[in-house]
Amino acid sequence: MEAKPLNPDLPIGHPIKVYRNLRNRLWSIMDAKTRRVIGHTNCVVVSDVTFPVNAKGVEKIRETCRKRVVAFVSGKFQGYYGDEECQQAIRFNPYENFTFVDSHGFPVKIADKVNLTASGWVWGKNARVWPPYKA
Image 1: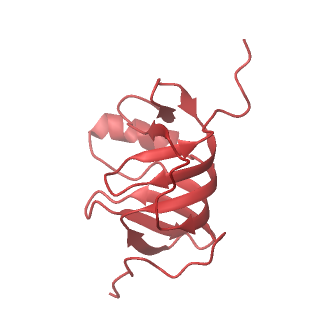
Image 2: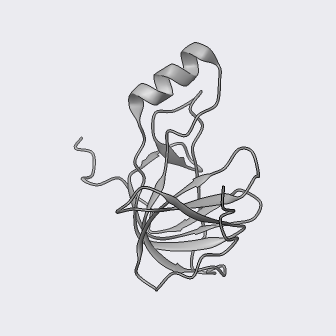
């Protein structure tokens, strides 16, 4: 089996999906079109972001108490170095929520840009729910 490159050579704007690899503690980068893992990295910046979560997968995690990949950061590749514009903390915990949430616990569905860091944190710019909730 061929080892995946640590930082794959991707063009800016390439559609990707990213998830936290629980074994090597790196971000796994998946080609959005082929759905194949093309590399791993400590940090990555993604723009035009959506946060897809598999609800049935979350239920399975809660039933079995076993970790599995059910949530992604999906968007366009922008590079491997941090972006200081991203200052809104975003997280996902399948035992607490069915969606990504911001630091106040509000659900997040889209963001202009996110910075996935070596420490495992996701920092976003203009992260929000779309369409907005109606009162």
